[in-house]
Image (tube, rainbow, N blue to C red; front, side):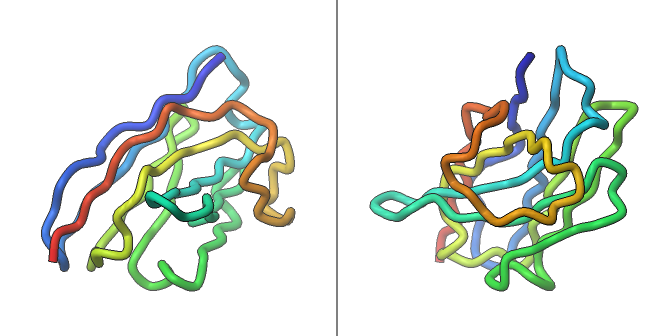
Length: 125
């Protein structure tokens, strides 16, 4: 089983990117999916979470109103639409499966689950 992130890249401030997290080999709708990010020299931080059926969505304060999370269980994919990007959004973005399927747990940067390899987002000023 694995999850794979894609969609990162280089974008100017104010621009948009859409990240994808695609799973294989697991019962996708058994899990919530969380996005974390980690900038160089900084700790990994939680960005967003979506419950197993998409009914609950959680965002970090730093991305509220700019990022939108969604999922398509038929495609086993979660999307993170990122608009109005800022240089401080520059980081490696990771998705991870969460057996707490309702996004009610705390952000745990070292949580167990299926982690992807990450996709780099770079926002230039």
